[in-house]
Length: 493
Image (cartoon, rainbow, N blue to C red; front, side):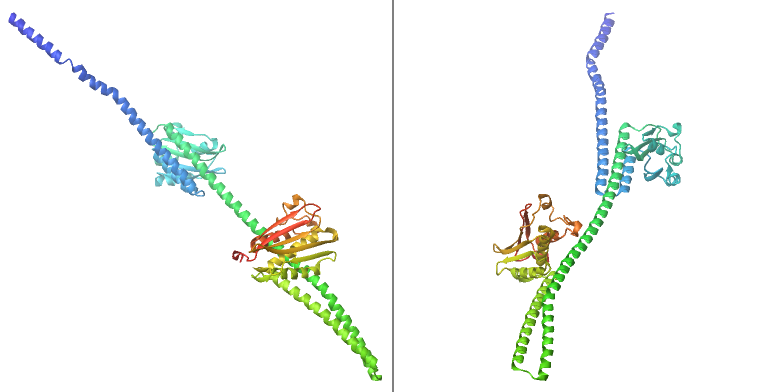
């Protein structure tokens, strides 16, 4: 028994020792248990990483579409094509499509992953009436998201479903100011709802599609409006050019009328003297037949000399008038650049203007000698003509008596200053602020076009390369100061 007891004891001791040796086993067992508690964390981290990756993909897809919209504001079709491709990829769908509403019809405008059978089916079904019971028309008509887990159960069966075999569908309308203008749809083979993130992604794509449509519409409208404005501007310029030409012809007409009036005096005087001389010659011829006394001969000689002298004086005066007129007319019609003396050209222009001005308006010229210019005498003459005529019409209205003073002198080494002044009725601040605007006039009812001073401003600032300033107060007259370079800018040519 002792031996057995010892044996038993030994076995018991061995068992105890074994138990003692196995004591750390719970720790070893607990290690796998600890690993099991860490797995959910790793799974969660993996899930978060996957979600982050998907979010980045969605963000990249939306950024890509926005970039495409920005790069091609009128290209709607590439945007739709990219949207349906990204929708099919990111929503793991078997089909994706985009639709546009046109009045009471719904049109398919883009699709992805469609088989030839599916393409044939949609071409047969679309355009579809907006009143149709298909889910696309319903989503657009009712302006709401259509989300079906299984179209076979819900009754959303269609020819496209038969050819493609999709079971679930998500349709998001494109809303512009609460008006549905289209829709985007994705379809999946599995009969289950799309995740919320994919629903929101499709809403984002729908919003981007609306942006693309609106951009294209606004861009087209802006282009059309720009075209209309360009045409209006061209018409306005043509009308302005026509009026400018009319104004120039009217000024030239006034000059011609004045010259004709002035020529009447020397020509008429010459005709009168010549007629009297012919009568005197006839009487002298009769006297010669009966015998001529020396006193009669001397009287005829004196009369002949006086008549010839009067005719010569008047004809020379007519020649001077014609030469002055020719010079002014040539300079006014030919805008060639050439060297000239500003004082001489000013005198010539004013001399021609005096023919057509009323007798109670006096134009005085006081120019420094030696004002050599290399510029455009024709446009400069037009400036002088318009300013003098403007004073005659506006500074002294209703035929009142007055005067215009024109002075010119060197301003530094390279410029010349020309000052036009009158003591007329002056200009109010309201009128003065618009004085150089085209078509602005206070006497339109009396035939003014409002282009005289506008032409002056354009010639001075553009062709002559100078600047112009007007000073005036009601009742205190007007001063117009012009500073032009002696050498006109070559860019003006």
